[in-house]
Image (tube, rainbow, N blue to C red; front, side, top):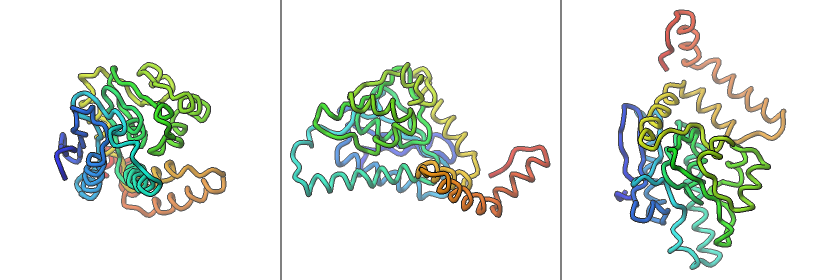
Length: 255
């Protein structure tokens, strides 16, 4: 792995992955994407890591795809590029550990897509989100056609994506695009606090609930089937026993 993605340990159990291409506003080149995949896989594979933070160097999250690499694809190379992108999408969307996006500055295009794959988005007061894929003759990708609607509703997502809008931080907070807004100089600390809070949740129950939320069953029967399977497993888990014991003993659970 190159230094285009830095892995930091700001606290026990927390891995912070930093997109480190500040001279290009952390635009997502092929090298940066591949380095991020490697870093995410490594962090998820470490037993002691309980949560991940995604952020960018230089006060910027990610300015989107690297335009210098665009406009050169045929059908086969374009498909290969998208399949590589989707490897990262699946890694983050299906991560069995909490993922927090700490968004400072801009999160445009693919940057917004990556942020929206996180379980929680903490943003600095100077952050903004951009969705102008049509300007480049492209379809919104990185799962945005689903993830944005899951956060802000289908009608609002349609309006944002089909108009190729940018969303400032005030509107982003109002419509639920972000979970928490803090002063820019408090972003790192706030994201760490959020990651630690999610890391304290019972890992087994968190993992099962997150999968159902991500897969978003579209019928009541499908939802109840998923809930049935998840809760049946939870009933017999050590976490459930610890949670009940802690409640009865009037103490915090130790998951």
